[in-house]
Image (cartoon, rainbow, N blue to C red; front, side, top):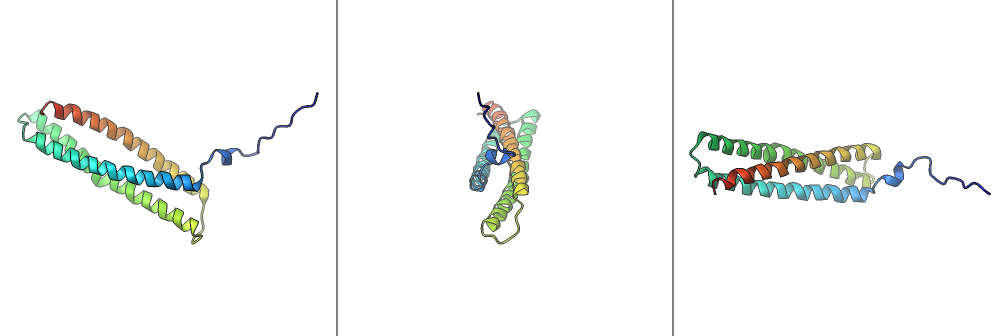
Length: 141
């Protein structure tokens, strides 16, 4: 009986990596998500303003401040930074595709993975924020 030779390549990482076009689509999707989160936060700000008029307790007013501060942080700092960084990331890819600059694909993939982690972490935190905000505001509606 003959032994079969293994056909596995020396480095299987290349088989597992997604194409640069897929990374580009993912970055574009993140930018769309960031835009949507920003619109959502505008809505949450209006919701808080509406509820604030019904709150008389010190605890309730502290709750309003807490949620508004998170909106300022999320929208005014995090999302702005994410958008800026991802747009720069996209410009770097564009230069690669136009062969206008030297390109380190492995570095690009590492940076992309970092952004992917940050977006996922923000999405998790933002879902928790929404859940907490809904619980808080429903007491006053």
